[in-house]
Amino acid sequence: MLHAHTFRANLAARLAGRWAGTPVVVTSLHGSDRWMARRHRLAERLTARFSSALSACSADVQRLAAARAGLRPEAVPVVHNGVDPERFARLPSRSEARSELGFPEAGLVAGFVGRLLEPLKGLGVLVGAVERAAAGIPGLLVAVAGDGPSRPWMEREIGRRGLGASFRLLGEVGTCRGSWRPSTSSSSRRSTRASAWPQRRPWPPGCR
Image (cartoon, rainbow, N blue to C red; front, side, top):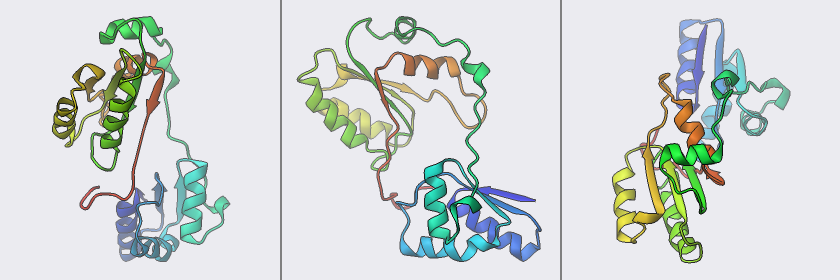
């Protein structure tokens, strides 16, 4: 059995599975198709039939994936990302979370959760929006949970605009390798009144 995730891995798995005669090839779909050029959509449509089964992580992805592969939505079952509820059995109160992270007790705290990758994640949009909002919201603080290659750029941009007091860069609070710390992540979410997981299109050249 061969199981792959995301466009490039799925494409490779379908072709390799067909070449090797692997009887079961399962490919999972995890994102939108907004970044895809015509050649990507064509490759998806032509190779989808090489998969023994397709799955999508949400109803929206199911709809998009079925349309680009020329399939009925029911042919692409939804398999939601698994979450262990025991890891979130006890969430801190907002006051506890703010204290743990060193945030002020009062004032508006907004949150960003994502990889620091500009322009894909819209960091420039975030910084610009905070610059405009800070003038009318005294004490506004934006907690940024995540890391990535654009962190130095973001730090320079925050400094250039004089927004050091409005941002708190928390760095990486979890990974895909099992070292995710739910206490830190939960605290960052509980301490905010708004959070964002942004994504812009198209993908920058060379992004994976």
